[in-house]
Amino acid sequence: MVKNIVNAIVEQMEKENLLNIEMKEYFTYSIAMIIEKWITIISVLFVGEIFKQVVQMMLFLFFFLLLRKRTGGYHASSFLHCYIETIIISIVVIHMCLISARYMMVIYLLVICSILVISFIGVVNHPHLALDYVEVNESKKAARCILAIESIIIVLLIVLDVCRLCVCYMSASIILCALLLGLAKIIKQEVKFENE
Image 1 (cartoon, rainbow, N blue to C red):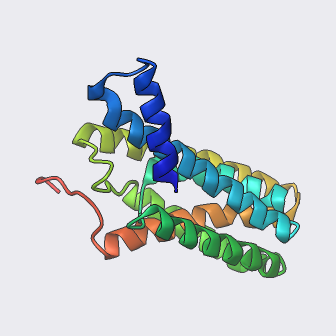
Image 2: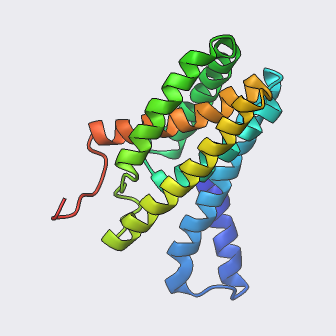
């Protein structure tokens, strides 16, 4: 369905001379990514609304997407698989946070382990990203910087004793990024350089 919408948009752009034939593939891919991302974000927020956790899911998405963009990690084989996995993960995150808010020490331990994993691994260069050596190093620096900022925010909220549930959702975003990094490493879903 997304493919049909994207093809119709790109064909219309081509008819109106808004792009040339060489750029058709690039625009097709870019528009598809934008549409798929927004379908997924809106669906996750809808899941949040079903469980009366939409604000918390916004926090989760903000922290997760900011970090995930730099770290990479496991990627599903198709948009449909990604979409289904994302919805399932969203439901699991909501239930985990609602239950774990009473057991904050478990969350603290998991987030500390996740921070260490992300700090150590940094980035997984997925074949679809095809980053070069310099880009991988820049992404690692950016990922570690964002991780530090997110960690400081979480620590401040813990110290100030502000909204345990929000802390759970923010922590869950870091935990999920670490899990996806680890999974990509385990299933060897990455491009390695010769000197690695």
